[in-house]
Image (cartoon, rainbow, N blue to C red):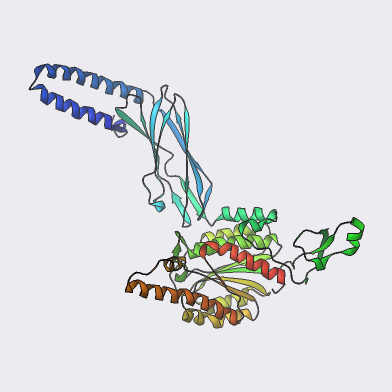
Length: 444
């Protein structure tokens, strides 16, 4: 009995009728004939509530439901969720659905309304965009059912305590993998890099298409086929590509809800996949004041899953970055000349100069590409026109900070470190472009 009462809710219609009856009863003391009619209306009202309760509670299980979503969510992407509800009532019912989202979303107003026919089913679709990795726990699907009478509602709590793990952006990874397989990476903004040398071996003869280097024309094959044929060369294989990701405090800054660390993790996952598809070996090192994880370079089956699991476990620890320990680890773990993509962030020239000696020492044996980020919020502020003296002062400071970022990039280039300075949203494409450029020029 008490258990059923916890699922019972009175509707707004019931309260309106109840207040109206109360007013009529009061007025009945003035006009006695009104008191008689009010008692009759009250009797019909009670009978209607009883009929409504019978229709709602006449079945033990009047509503079944489940929540369907991906086995794991992709961080920073829109992930589809479907709430499926099936009615066990022999009459049409009205439905209000409140899905209890994980606390990480801080959203409590996801409500759907619908009318379900007798024995019918209804699907409710929506998307969620997580911005932090980890385990997300759903609450229950609260289905509030009412009959056409609409005086009471019965609540069903369905599919409670469902957990979903949020991994680095594997949806972005799949997107670039598909484009790489179909040789259509240019659709994602990846530039077509012209090969400037052929240090690698001959692969095959193919028909000329616009954009191919005319210096590679195979005149003998052209004469035999009657159309222009060119030699195609494959990049040097089995080179090593390491993503070195700083997990210190400088990577905590968020842009569009996603931290710089998560942007770097998503980009590292994609570039590792692209490198392995081009038959290079991919590896991973994460560090802050100490080295956290080292995944050796490989392209064996299951290696991408190992990288994915290592990236999933990363988090910013608010520590100051220590490149000296990173240098020692690279020296002991990476014996072959490799491409080192160093994901970090520099907010001042002084911060860059503290790390520069270690980057230069790494560059003696490897090709080091420092990667850091533009502050897009500052660039947005520069578009606003100043109106007061304070606005002029703020604009001058903002311009100085933006200029300092570009000054850092030029300083790194001057010391032989081909840096990448980009918006966080453009990171993945920028890293792929630099990797393809390095491979095409054969400078690794």
